[in-house]
Image 1: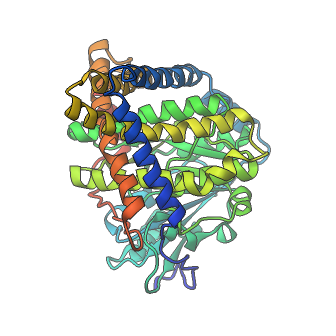
Image 2: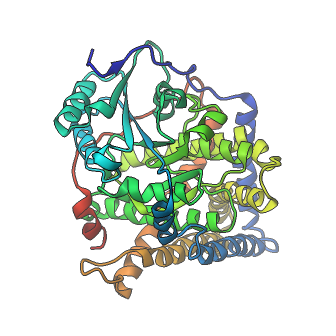
Image 3: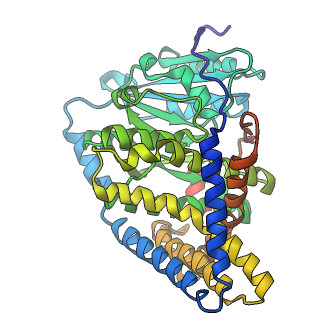
Length: 469
């Protein structure tokens, strides 16, 4: 056992299962959305369906885009708050890793290079790595890298061992509950995460400014390597605009898995990490919203870089998990969020709207069936065009954050091309969501968590210019 290892970690709960009530709800959503879509083929009623869906989409998208320009805490305000702070917040950086020896050394080096330190260069952070049943020497790689980089004193490895343990990131994190963390803030990173030296300093500013929950801006490494990687990079930028706008409007903005930051006391208050959570980020987002009325701040200038999913098959499996996780979160925590006395009505309406937009893909499925049977395709084309069009408009707007290699804003032609690319990429959800609902309704047995492979390509220094190409 490595010298830094800590045995006896909590293994987590039993593998995730699906209550019958959730199965019925999933089937009802799938059938109900399909039925609404079928109405689009009706001679008299058909025209109303695309008009209603387009109206709802525009009514939600435009206010969010405008609000994203006025965040409650700007990067400048966060930096100023940290400068004024008498006591700077400390961090516990938690990483769940299973067979990640190939990339963990790079992350340890990035952590060691953080310039967020006290007088005498004492790190204002600790690193806790959960070695989740690795067989490739992940723990040994972490311990060796920490010693080489001079942060062994603030690095711990927690070994998660046992038979028949649930898989997944949320399950791994149960071995590093808030009671073993020493920092004021718990920061969760994926094993393939890459950080620039100022990451923690910039993130700390948001907590100094009063935030209790913050998520980093996710960036994609090696985004110039192909269409798929580039589309994922712009998808993250678009998602950042949506949630930054929701935050500014007082809505239930959400964490994203790589770069979750939450005050340790708040995490402890809501029960820590849950092995049952298929998507630990939105699961925690809803729990802190319902229990404490907390909204997640989006730190545009605190960037976490990660590898893209490089194959269509792996991307499909990842998005299926995300979609099913979103429905599970809605079924499990939705009632508590919608009835929470800690949340204003605006936040609850935002949550309901965000969940309801997941019903659009089943509507499209029904409209497609109606088009095949009736031969009337205009309504289907209108719904799909509206769905993709809104994605393109929001993609165009969010790309104002991006710059070219010369540091200037993107040219109109490149910006338009990338907006259209991310719109087409988002069309994947039209297929993923119905399949996720069907799986949730009909699959038996525990959920199988598919781990993504990492190849170690790319680095943050080159990432910004690559993303701009």
